[in-house]
Length: 102
Image (tube, rainbow, N blue to C red):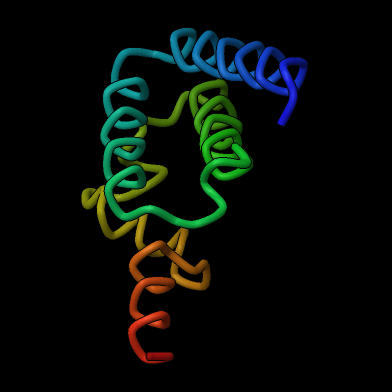
């Protein structure tokens, strides 16, 4: 990873954060909870940014249509996240697999 990749990554992250800040307050609160949960669970492909960007896209569409955030995701943030990543390997899965290989 070169310096240009790092700079590009920072620029993309700042643009992502700006999109999150532009969401209505209830959407921002729920997004932060989703983000915190996903960072703890650790889907392996979280670093590529597609999952978080997809959530922001989904939230922007919901806000534009006048829906409340809980109308979109339901009352359980963790269950929504688990459903998003149910078929995605997590770092815990990778670790478990490495233990089986010993």
